Amino acid sequence: MKLSIVIPIFNEAGVLETAIRRLLEVDLGPEVESELIAVDDCSTDGTRERLLALGEELGFRVLLHGENRGKGAALRTGFGAATGEFVLIQDADLEYDPRDIPSLLAPVLAGQADIVYGSRFTSGDAHRVLYYWHYVANHVLTAICDAITNLNLTDMEVCYKLIRRDLLERINLREDRFGFEPEVTIKLARLQPQPRFWEVGISYAGRTYEEGKKIGFRDGVRALWCLLRYAVAD
Image (spheres, rainbow, N blue to C red):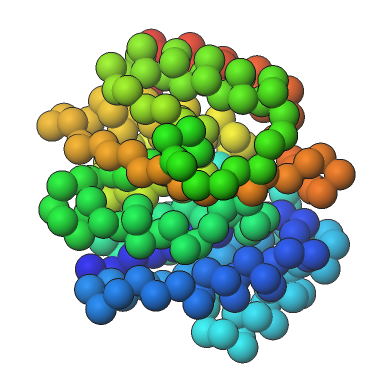
């Protein structure tokens, strides 16, 4: 099986190299061939230059946006370049541990899943304790998404999404920012026959805003708007 790992990146100069080296060190096992596709979304803090140098040194593909367009747009660019049977989304901010990737792959390799979501709320692993209202908003948005899709996900907003690439090619993604999460979930759930969704508990080391966290209140409002929009329209 070939796995395409897509990393959308914007202004992560301080953690970029550590994140990529950790990812490339993970042993995915003999059944999995992987490719790494990093998409810089017009960073302005030196990330782009360091990313290009790392890509040359470590042998992964780097794609560049000429203007800042958002996470969803960067993911679409990465998906378009992917050649693997499955695509995995990986952030570059050290919040998600690449050592969880083999657990995400397990239901796929067992022939049980077409789509695997990580969940920060079903794992017994250590988690950093942070923002209460983020936690509440995530649960509310996930509950609304589950009502729309008739799924029982616990963490729709999670970064770690492992998706069969041919399924991604069957949906038309439009959201440029964090509205990607509800959009992709609703549109995948509506495919017929419905793909087999699985969920796997993962660890999580969230950041504070002082440490560079980017998602905020406006993104939560946008996610709610996207849920309502894609509940009734494509």
